[in-house]
Length: 222
Image (cartoon, rainbow, N blue to C red; front, side, top):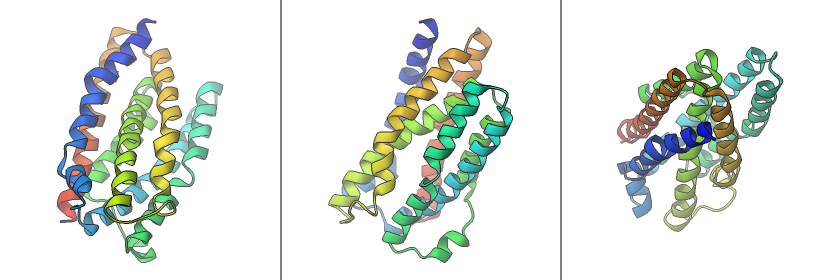
């Protein structure tokens, strides 16, 4: 019970304010108004495609790292299978708004997106199970929230349909289960005051990296 209360406080004190700040950022303020440029939308598609490819490799490595632990091995195997289609769904969105295959093949990460992905992989490879999944908790919560924004406003302002927006349709629903699973792993593996402090710090860093990622996309693709 105490650990569940800790996760609740983590969401209330760090994750929820981070989501609110993201929704108030220029990227999403302009998306809601239909004023976000196509170049910035394309920038998101390219950068998220690269990030999702890295996530798949990270989950594969986590399966190997945790092969001795049936619970964690099964969890990362599940996550790998859940995420397998997501790079292609991000690409599908990008192609629908004017990108070409070569735009994805030739792209590299901008600084802020490189830092965000590096944070995620660092948590997978070097962090404790609780640290690893608090990064997932932050990212999955934010992705679920902004997927609703993309889905609503790309339809109303940019006239896209279900096929182009499949990435966001999936994440509006699937991430509810991912958030719950991450919360359960954090609760079970946060068992000392020192670990609580590390998890809180990891959550704070994850929020800041996510906000910086969207700020970087907004500025780089101006």
